[in-house]
Length: 237
Image (cartoon, rainbow, N blue to C red; front, top):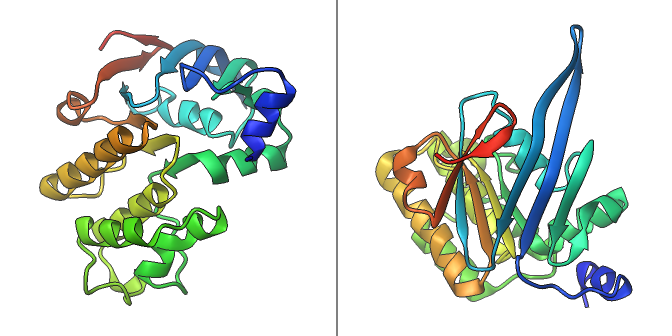
């Protein structure tokens, strides 16, 4: 039983639909001019097996929302519930365990480990979480275009290749929730399309949920639903 399952059992709840529920989420940051409200009451939900594209201008709060859902920052108000567990009720170490066990994260920075090869970077998070699957690892290497390049190091890769490794690393744990912040921003269109196909395939195969922040309306249209973050709230695209 994982940490998140134990928390659900202790609270008398069970993981249930929706897989992710966000309600009344608010977040502000201090500035020299006073508090800057970034999120002003965000509500969203994701069912298992569903994908959602989050559109919005730069600075609209897309990255902030993903950070909060990932438990990398604390909310000012509102709730984030993942598989029946309120993230606000978890200590920092417990939130880290939830990320390790249930969440795959792809942000704009690659954050690869320079001393590890492509294969070892790809497997790193899955091994730490105790979820390494050799067959899935080999499939990721192939579908991300790294067959024969497994022994290369990050400094020997292009920016686009490094982003593909970062995406594969997040997918390697077969997460219940996959969060991606502009995951194809550094990729050419063909590679970006393949990466998105891979992510959507995982959602279908594992019953996970997929939340992707993107500027691309073309890519957003391939997901099940689309919403736009504007003036701190979610609106129709």
